Length: 396
Image (cartoon, rainbow, N blue to C red; front, side):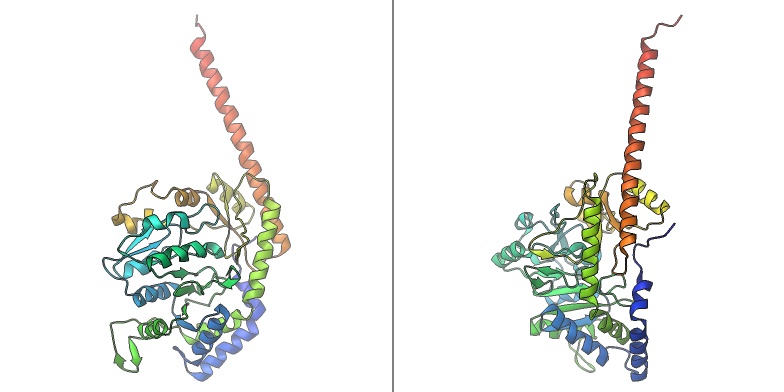
């Protein structure tokens, strides 16, 4: 049995090994390990890649989101609108400031913030809107921005899973006043540890974010406000410089695999992710929707295929946010999706044979599930008929 991992970072490393080792050696030789020249180099090339003026590198995507909230002076008593179907770091950034996350349900097709439900969530306390480009699929930014502009509310993009994705021909990261990326190892552009970035076209926001990530220093040893140590280390920047040169090629491979999945899985009683004419997703995750998910996962595991769930519990139902007072049923689209979502293996080095193996195993899993379900239904009918017979038979 040939195993198919959910993600194979070792296979990726093998393709860039010599460059990586040379870059790490260069950092060691420079002895500039924290926010050194190599991080500045990465900031310049990533800003250019995103089509913006500024990139502020930090130590995680969570930190980038936190700095974005601080730069907008979000604080106690404020509200920030986002979605419940996301990784919880999105709302951590809001909570760290003392503000309250306010949720808007997702659109069932895009799986991102439903712009038709946005306006109803806006109050006089709304300080920012934080849409998430989930799984590498851009949110529908045009109506979100139109509503935000009408109310004078800034938009911050959570682009942690969408490096290189396009919306209306422009890379994500260009639509909000700030946009935040994660470089966690499993991301399309991943470091060999933690990393993140805030990008923006606003000079003042970039300057404040740079100070906040570095102990509030506008110049060395002069601290203008309470701040943080969110700096990116030079090793991660060196890795990201190398990987960024490969990102478009890797995203193209992911898109090719996603197309293959959609073709091979067409016709099955499962939900498949959609493509949209206004966007080019980068397929950080290929997420299907299915019933009896754990049974499907177990079957695939038995065939040597790893899968994932992103995410099994929407944020509004997490214990950490019990104080918000939400109950099941408050955001039904997110809740139903979280019950059914299943992430299939997808990564640039994945072979056609592996994609076909996953698709065939999933077909077999669904067929097995259907057959077992039919057998269970047949057994139930037999038992029901037997009980009816006993109830109507006159015993001697």
